[in-house]
Image (cartoon, rainbow, N blue to C red; front, side, top):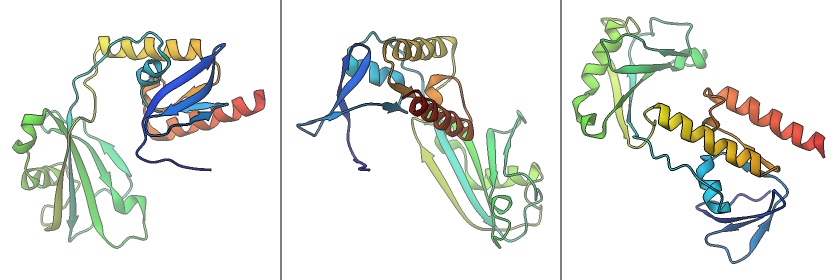
Length: 212
């Protein structure tokens, strides 16, 4: 198996509804193809195949990820991660690392916030740390030993009816016009959790192999 990094798909050749060749942007030769496993958004493949595409550019949110190491055990000793539905905080998800690896001696936790790009500076490490205390995930008398704030632009799309409809139409066009393609990932609109995406990909590959 060969893995090519820093590449872009320039063209995908079709013959009678099957992908036969893939042309990479920086390579003069084409890759003979029996099965195309596509985990990027379907519209990119459609453009490379010269098939109809529903224009569908969503508004993207900025992700802020706050990482903390504290001097006391976390108060929740069971959950791997939590979805936060408390509308008084911008935190939407928390990961509790000691529960992922019980042998770990460190007390580490991450909190995630989604916001508009211009709002990124409004959220401080101190405020988020205090919010985790208020949510009873960190002890009130715990001290922060170290912290990092990550700012990652252009992450989650803002969901809308138009965005979901466009995604579904592009997925349908790709699936209906090409028989030897497996469309994987969240862009297909069928799975969201990464574990479900991986299970679906495994099952799709197994079905393709059995079909011969």
